[in-house]
Length: 142
Image (cartoon, rainbow, N blue to C red; front, top):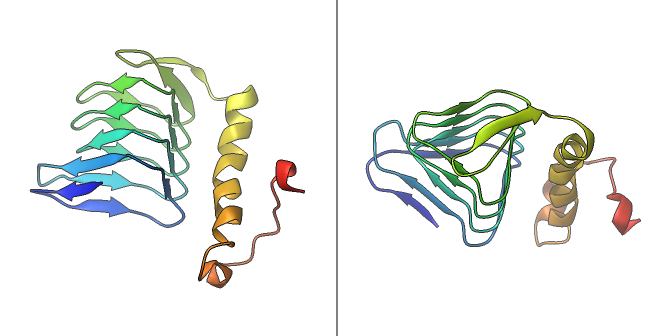
């Protein structure tokens, strides 16, 4: 659900917002979501900024004025507090969320392939053939 009560909600190209998410803005700053972001099922984003290529895990909550950097990963169920900043290419987890490590290993692989997987699947929906060509087929769909 998108609810822009008092400010804008901006969602950039190739971003994937999954089922039961709530994206809300209640200040003039609003909520801004960058390009190629994956937002997991049931996540709540409230007046925040999410950088390009980030992944927001299922049921994660981003509170007012927090910032998630480019290609950062917020673990499922985590709560990023008001005004907190998760730097670029970092993994944050917990309640409250804290930075755990620099992005690498399986988390980095997921970030690199997750969005492409969803873009591949879009091609099977009406109008999906109008998207730019991707030379990518998810490994598990070959």
